[in-house]
Image 1 (tube, helix red, strand yellow):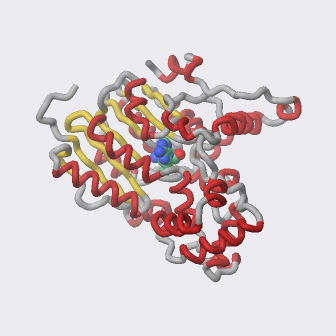
Image 2 (tube, helix red, strand yellow; image 1 turned 180 degrees about the vertical axis):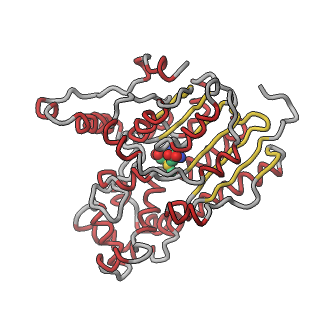
Image 3 (tube, helix red, strand yellow; image 1 turned 60 degrees about the vertical axis):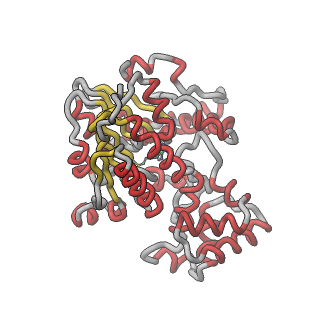
Length: 375
Ligand SMILES: C[S@@+](CC[C@H](N)C(=O)[O-])C[C@H]1O[C@@H](n2cnc3c(N)ncnc32)[C@H](O)[C@@H]1O
């Protein structure tokens, strides 16, 4: 089924759960769209089971104007290396687990069209809307799913696909998420302490920071952020929230700076912002990033065709370790016939152009021909 014909199916469309009142209808289309998202998120805020529900395809009009502008700044990380590794060919079926703004996806779709098929997934409805605009310019066949990539087997089953030629996952946060203060990812910009990549599901970061015990905070800051000042930061968080809940990015930045003996001013001039690690830890926690990656690595052998290739890009040592271990174990078990022994990194030129590429590591595997036949 093509993206268009699926779209016509009302059961796959996110619909607003609240009728806009008079005041709201006076707003611009962009603001109205944001309210629709907000209405959707409120009713599902505390229902963790939503992560396991069937994927939904979102409406194409979502945040259209805003995302067109953002698109121009977007540089996909390690694009040449991804194309080298996956070697996409006309007619192939490819899954992009992290569509983002569609940088990698559009390059892949260009190469598999006209008969190939791209299945692309993202947590973030606004990113899907932006990517849709980009992909629609390419005359290729694609389906977009607003869901967790951990639900990949369900997505493929819904698409009538058993196995794919290639899979890409460019794990982590996108620049649009970091840059938008309203999303609450940035220690440099004031906003609500949210950090959800999918603002329609789960709990915002403020809920975590105000509810976790001091020892849980220390553990999270240490393991997910490599933050050596974790005990001091956790102590100050607990003292601060005893007076009033922590609800904004500014408050958390101020607490972390104080715990690490930085003034806000000196912190903002530091090469690595003193709050960077704490924010990273909280973001990974809120979005269950390690858990989702583990689930993807587990299903990977079952979704790749024999000789099919997967490429995974990570930005954090905890993620890279998991990918490396899963690929090495799979090679030992005979599940993978080839694996990358060293991670592929961005060239100096790319690192100069794109700061984010500096910490990117790409690892790949090739699915072995199983001893028993696969469909
Ligand atoms: C680094 S960006 C991807 C950029 C993309 N490759 C491009 O070229 O535009 C990562 C994207 O993955 C999404 N994401 C992260 N974890 C996810 C998950 N578990 N399921 C679905 N999407 C996820 C984020 O919302 C974000 O849009």
